[in-house]
Length: 278
Image (cartoon, rainbow, N blue to C red; front, side):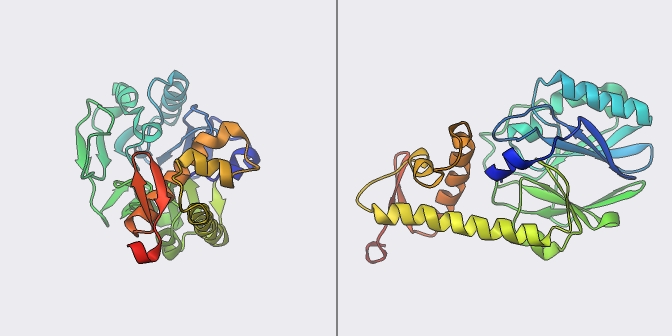
């Protein structure tokens, strides 16, 4: 999930960064209000055969050039590609990456299955499907798959056992807090060290935002609101060019509130349900 204040506060992320002896970050070169400076993709391992986590957006030649340069410089190839979830800024570049045939000839591509595949990008790739708790190893790196639905129904995070680290994708949730990682490698923004306090901040922030959304609907219970209507009410100090990202976050909260029968949906708008009407 994107936290809008980070869009203005984050330090500049280089195109390629060797973060540790076993983790190289390659920036997706796809900046936007939703992706911040771009999608972080990660090459992990220390041997000839390595793992790539996420592939950025489609049709970003700068990213493919940076990725190819790293693979060539390190004299490595890819054993596995893991997609954290189906959103275009994570899966979109998979065709372009797989076109690097000198480095992907024996590479398997993995993601968690979705119940409803209709919105998934039409990629001409054979996917292997992940299971919760599944483990994979290459030289210098062992990763464990942790299923974390919420941001999307197929979202996973990956635990890097050797570093007690998490590749969090777009997920900051209580389940990550329970894993007690020492490092978080996020899909957007900078690496987070000793992240327990920050994770708890995100959780508290999310709960506070949900209360604000519900309060808007409850205060005006005779009216219906679109996600953008709600954004205008509660993101007063947020620049308007970030409203789209804010509306995306609001939609996630509304989905949760719908499941809890606290609100109802009327076409593309939402209305509070008084408890006695449920």
